[in-house]
Image (tube, rainbow, N blue to C red; front, side, top):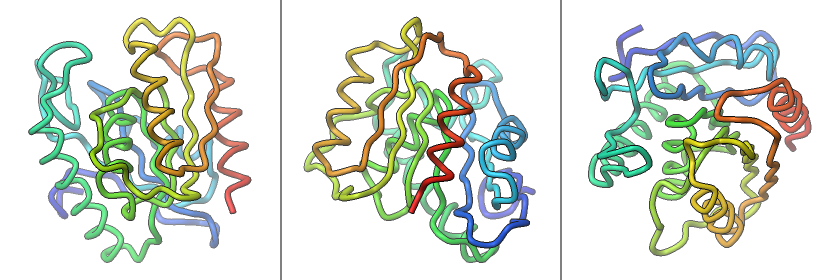
Length: 204
């Protein structure tokens, strides 16, 4: 689908009562990449999966970066606002509740940016291999917002200090945060899937 401003994939819910999942791919992914993951994490939930609109050497991303781990903050701000508008339009079009974001790498970073800049857009988030996208001033109001942050001990693509700072900021903002560091690299593991699925099943 190409309407609503983003090329995206939408899978209608098959089970009532489950929160919809907003699936946000990593660098080089597309709107199809995380559909199988979403189906495994929350079978029967509605799935909304947009494709990032920034191209980095032909690879889709959700916002520009100046170098590895160095973000174009002006572009990040604009792209985050653009994604928030897409979510609002998709909710109206598909009759969805506020989604839980499931983001991987670049997708996790823009999900974190949504939480920190427009906290009402998401009902929660699963952040897979995320780092702090920017320092929010002031802190957003995330009281009791459920967030799962899954990190890898051997992840050479994300500075550990930035991930730890993200956790600290989310906690300071009041999020109901669960953080786990797994013996993994930047890629996902079976443990990630088990933990995320269990966490989603126990959302209030």
